[in-house]
Image 1: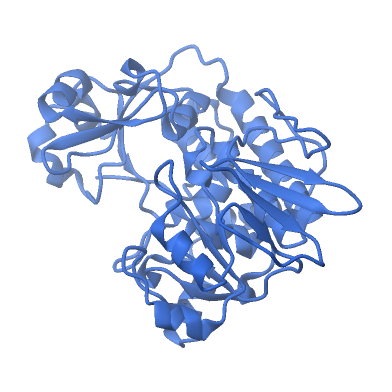
Image 2: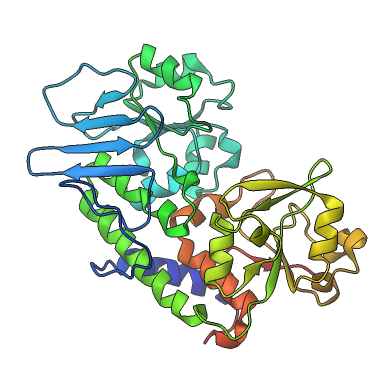
Length: 371
């Protein structure tokens, strides 16, 4: 292991050990009656008391989860989970990072599309069949799921309606939790979903401390680049099937770039959180003079960008990909632990966009420079 990678693992270990109760806030918190204050997340709510705890998922229709004994009459919009789940199936790799941070990774008995899992512990468990790959979310192995006897499935929805598998599991009397952290536009909003799972697993105090630590670290880093003298322009992504998808100015990635002292050069034309399909010719015209280029798909070398050799970012060798922690035949940890640890993404981006404002030699965790 290189000293550079070792340094970052020490930094990551510091994050888990440095649990604090203070936090830095830069958005209006959401306060629910008698509930837990959420600093950034908008997709869920928590109402906690000495008697019981109630979770709400802001889907359509809204789902209520009651965490108390003595009830067992659940339906599509009301779930009773009287005890902490012990046998969990994850339909998204992002939820694995949350469960590992909460110290309950041994409770995971099944995952969807295990080839995309990056957690070393889970990959080893899948290889030894201690954790079962239940297939793609569009073609789940129902028999395998039943045989695992799960007491919770953590999934997500991709539309305003409840997904079809949700109703399937409910008919089998298997509780399904929709964890839609990916819909949050702020990086800390996605990370804050650890509170949702923390309360569900009766580890709310730990979840709050973990998030407070993340929030503090992110806030301290943000101060470096909150008011830069110059914001370099950033081109994002790469064409796919004759379309170039660009996230809007209020999106998750645009927020990270802004907090790192840059600007999404094309995304700032769309004042929303959506991903916009743009004509390749338009992106070339608007992006040719971008100072930096991030996330060029699976491109691993500047020699693979011959069509774009006249781009300023290519000429100046300022092209970076978020694939440093991506292995062949596996997933990308940027989309797994990166969801929980946005301060590490922010730190990488600051080293890329404003190395003059950073006090250490660049030592990337998720990103790598292309040559």
